[in-house]
Image (cartoon, rainbow, N blue to C red; front, top):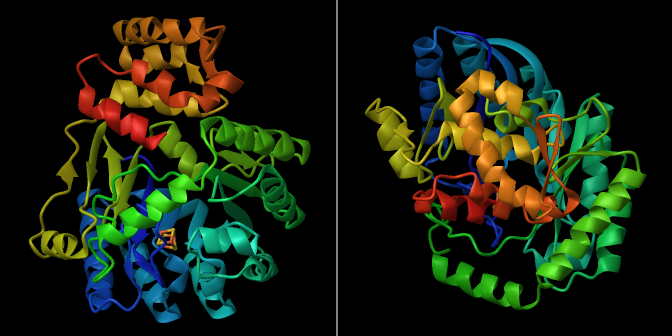
Length: 399
Ligand code: SF4
């Protein structure tokens, strides 16, 4: 098979952030070594099943992969090298500013890591407290220095719309982030409406009720939709003025520093995801592993296949994902992939969004307008078949 992209999920975190909906587990979990063994087993099996494919981009996400120990990183690297031909053009690891040290960074670099995505979230002490984060504002600058000293690229994640955040505080966060000169920035709105699904399953004593209370209080202290739109526009203006290109709804980069791995997702390419809660898209089919550690371990013990996603619609997904990018949805290219009837369906579905000024059509390429970026879920939902109610709610929840 041709080259793929590979996502590896390391779910462990020092503490659980109350807004988080990822598949996470305590770093002290008694299941940690069993999980890492199962992950190596899954990596070996997938590599063999796909005939040791070449891996072009690697993304180690979580969770907080930066907190696993150098010997654990070395074991993971060995499993990956045995199973795949690592012809890496880009390899990213996610890190928490407080759990990154030189020994771990050297171990990640030995694996082939080229960039670190740092979950700064805010550079403001009040912001970090409001988000329930355990690291300190000054940890981010120290982590950026450590990453740079090893010649690795830096991406910073920021969250806007945290409880009590003002426009001035957001400008200060953006200014502080720009001063650190990252290669790439991701800015996400604080989203509190998602169902936690399996997000709390691995955390004994940290049940949904405490998360629900935190989210209700945080939501009451958040700005409204118009306020969130204003914060988003501030990010657009500030980052563009600082030389960052807004290449995806929530992502900005210096030219040439766009995240190649995530571009594979947005172009709906081929990727394999391994680990708890990881999703895959291979040969036009989506599938996943469960986020609960016990369910994941049982599945790997039983050598069970990934769970197929019955809601996936490759045609609609490809159109929605392409619209997230500034390069947009090229309808000629889309016709080559899915045929003329599929293009006719998408054109009809886009007509209302064009009329509302949410989408612009230039020479067969559809792109979100600035207003469309703010109301992207309204555009995406129109691209789905009328009867696809479950997927519609999924899109509305995820944008
Ligand atoms: S936000 Fe990051 S550090 Fe916090 S629980 Fe989620 S994955 Fe872990």
